[in-house]
Length: 311
Image (cartoon, rainbow, N blue to C red; front, side, top):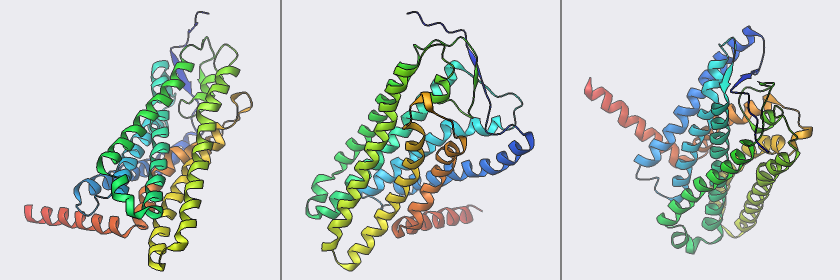
């Protein structure tokens, strides 16, 4: 069947319709996005400059922060500018591009969180083999594999979306382009593609979440054999990972596990995982990690001293 596509531009309804409320949202979400970029960017710079943060855990943390910047930047800048626009539009090609990068970076983050859980498992459950297993080359392979996995996941999403016919209407009931609201505009039955998306996104998120939870259960079980100081340090690190996992997977599973035919869009949940969660990650990791906090303080001290000397 030949795909009929008369829609070249889409109208986005946005988060709220009241102009005054949109202005308040603009004043609220702009600082949040700037904090996301600056906070995660600071972690990336600190890990790559500081000589004390050379362990695999910090290589993965740096990669995760970079993904958070990209993930948030896929949606939030346009969302913020649209809050001040009377008519919110996006081209069909731009919509597909946003879907691709949104899922690309989202799944890359899931895989990186899985890699970080594996790193903690090896460090706590197999400490004598840690340096041999988590070599620097292995770390780079795991990071690269996460990006490649995110790419292939996202390509599948695009391949099932492009053939769909869109002949009108062209109004997306959301504040950014995603699969569920876009499928509602297709001029054909989307049950099959909805099932594919359910498997590719919903079940993938559930199984990844269950794997992560299982990993941390095994880790916590093995902590019984460690000293009190070892348990305290390990629990502090794992607690940060677990908080990030719950904040990321909770909304994702809630939104993508249900079939498209019975789906009711919840924009506020989407705001949480696209705008709020990326900002919280650097706060969670830095506040609970003394090494990162000390490295940030040293970096900040060097920048201040350099600025004073130049003046």
